[in-house]
Length: 63
Image (cartoon, rainbow, N blue to C red; front, side, top):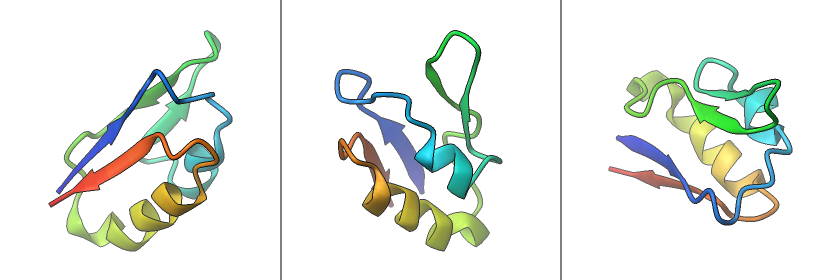
């Protein structure tokens, strides 16, 4: 499984980071960073939630 972000859409609002800080981080430069592009399966439900709740639909979860 792989999580990707479309940086043209992303507003770095940190909703995904609030859901799963092990994978997402918004840093002082106000940009979103993916800490683990290929996260473990145990994070799937939280990743799906982050994808659903992204206000700009900038996140994609691929199998």
